[in-house]
Length: 203
Image (spheres, one colour):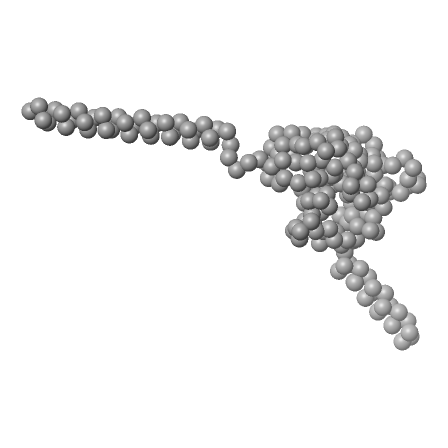
């Protein structure tokens, strides 16, 4: 009886530890084929350019492997070159702590084929080198599988995003117009003052 109770307690503790630790990336199955429209090395402009992503179940996967698949969440992820010396983008095996894929593209119900989505690169996406990853979630919203546009070392099919600058063309034009108006107003003020002064002297 005591042994049975000990084994049960050990099992519960193991389950609790696994729950607290969370799902790890290394435990996921690579079952999705994911492609994206940017060419390797292409530079996209944040707030302007679009990315078309497609994904489908790898046809070489065992039959029924996707029986628990419920949702696919597609994300924009930092490549290693843009993670160096940036702890806020660090890759961690525990997905709850992982900061590789911070930019959500879309979440859609799972379908084994014919999945396409076109996304405009958001204005707040920083300048960096990226790839696309799709996570598959089960009914408990836990990651169970994935697919990505790059290889396991995250060195192929990478593209760049150029962030928008702090200044906008319309702001620059408005600034120039305001400066010109200020100069004209200043000269007009001096001209009027000078005329007033001459009028006073004539009287």
